[in-house]
Every structure is written in structure tokens, then in C-alpha cells.
Length: 195
Image 1 (tube, helix red, strand yellow):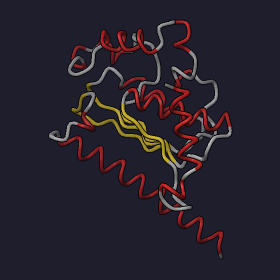
Image 2 (image 1 turned 135 degrees about the horizontal axis):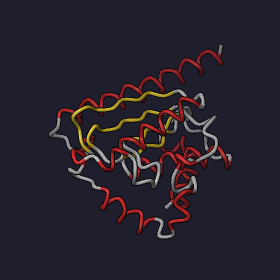
Image 3 (image 1 turned 135 degrees about the vertical axis):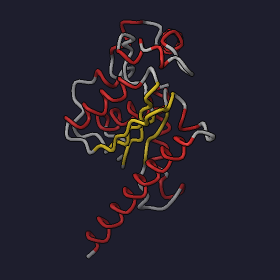
């Protein structure tokens, strides 16, 4: 999955003009396991000289394979995703438990997060992934990465795509505002460089 995602990122980076316009920013984004891949792509792009990423949008991301965090053991967090479910997913995604601590599987375990693109991180109050997502946001901020973080109170895993929930719209608007701000900032930088 990591190699395929990085190949897709490289493909998109080489074709920004075809896909959009020459000055269009490139974002990586995902929810849950997709948030894991988005975070890993930001690390890979930095470390491998990949395309410049304007921002990483991480929606209740999987950032670590540690199932002993308090959010995993809280009974209120067993609505749509459970510890047992996450163990099953990890057993199929990275069967070799020793490899789960590698940054390509658990970005929270990366030794250096400095120099990564700005991040938008959304977590849900009643989600087993809450603590690892928030720990990743804290580590990004400590590394000097600009961060837009919000825990969505009263929400569960998957709320962003469950359009019938009021939290879905709030989460969506948080992401839209961050994307618009990034695009506006890039436009200001481009006009300043042109003058």
C-alpha cells in the first residue's frame, strides 16, 4: 500500500498542470487507514525528495499499532470501530508485528517529524484511534509543523463520512477552511514573488 501510494503521489506531482493548474497545491488526505497513508506519504515525500505537499489532512488517522492507549480500553469507544477490529486490520495490513513499529506502518514512531507539511488533524471523542491521532498532532506541533487540530466532541469513528451526523458538516467545514487558507496563502506567495 505504501509503495502504491507513493507511486500515485509521484504521478500526481508530475501532472499537476494536467490535473489542475500549474500553481495548484498538492494535498495528501485520508481518514482512518487513509489517514495513515496520508501521514506516511508526507514522511516519504520529505525523505525521498518527492513532490512538495502543501498540507496533510488526517481525519481520525491510524498512526500507531499500540492497542493499550486509554481510548482503546474505554467502553464508550466501541461503537463503529473496536480494539479487536483494529487488531484484525493490523494482522492483515502488517502481519509481522515487529514491522508495525516502523514509520511506514506507524508514523507516530518516526524519530523526526520536522519539515513535514502543515497538518489538519481531526479526531473523534468516542473513537479507539483518538489518542494516537492526538499524540501525532502533538508530536507534529512539537516538531514545529503548523497544525490545525480539533477533537470533535460527541463523535465516533467515521463521523466525517456519516453525513447524517451534525459533526460531519463541522468536520468538513474545518477541512474546507484549511484547504482554502492554504490555496490563498500560496496565491499570496506567488503574487509576492512575481512583484
